Image (cartoon, rainbow, N blue to C red; front, side, top):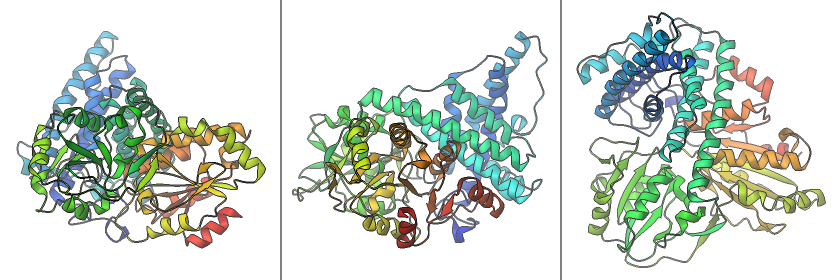
Length: 547
């Protein structure tokens, strides 16, 4: 295997025998083969769309299959193998769609090769053998290192886009133009040789695409569950039976809450599900009891101690301990060998496991944190914010957001948040906030100094806040008293970074390490064009940002 798509990759260079995430080489190779197969789907789907033909099932499969290849999502080789065979069937459907459209347009259908003509082996082990021909060291033989790395940057950005698009699709939202662009970009990546210039342009195009997809997801969330509102969230349990839900998918949470009404079971959020408490339709359920634990990196100990059933939605699963493997369940794209998977949102097995488990024996302390500062809530007090800045009461905004991870160095974000002066506001989103979101920040100008915007899925909300402030101050985003400090881990963070670069945002600090898939030449180019820079020491970086 060779994998360097996440921040914790071995030695900062690449995982060669087993993933630091826990993925074995068979599963990792099969995921590479799945991406290869999806490129074949896209080659036909892209050509069909240029002729006015499209198929929503082809679009949905492409993003869902790509989602399964993100870090910490699907660790089950057999399930990935099934997706490969599905991809080939979908590819044939796309081929027929294209050929019919071509004939209708009076054109001779092109005979495609590469991923569009690839044939899968008949067995899982045969697929594993085939996967060795699409590993990164093999597929990049015809390109220089810089172009090969840029190709991966584009691919990882598309994977991140696919995750956001899949979440939107779960709520019935999706834009044909976005799917068309996904197919177009994958079709481009199916070409054997591309220049660095072509790939850099493609990366920024993925950033633009991601902005549109995140906007669609934001509309789906707020249109379904209401605009987030500031809300107090209990962070210690209360006595009774319990289910813990982790991941990102709010539609899964809603379905679980509906199915547990009146059963005497409390539902607790974990990790990136914390922001759910700000949505009116979700917090209207009295048995949405609070948040338990922190980021995904701590789940092994937190899940072990949780005395109920656990449901993993979307990504961020780790290898379950045997002590809770029989009471953890997966749904959607996430999977782990030996863990029961629910494919139809019938959560009765989760409920039964919760009723068998002892639950919490007593109430914990009445301690709370505040969430729910989406763009609607923040912009409703924009006048107060602008006045505070103009009067000098509010000096600067710091957006400290992104993913958490297991690699050392992430204490930087806690240190930075602690040292930020009291006349500044901290905006945060993503699971990186668990490094500091229980600290006492106090208030400024009648506002909390820590504003939790939501999930990594809510990056669009953060951008709307920044754009609205820029409009209010009649300046560009880069002229705002705003500093961006990001922690990255996986491919959704890559998509977000590409969106920021597409929008021309400069002076971003990123850490705790820089991506292994960015060559020195590309980093130099991004540094020159956008002043993208690595984090350093918290105290020194803070002084530079305040200067």
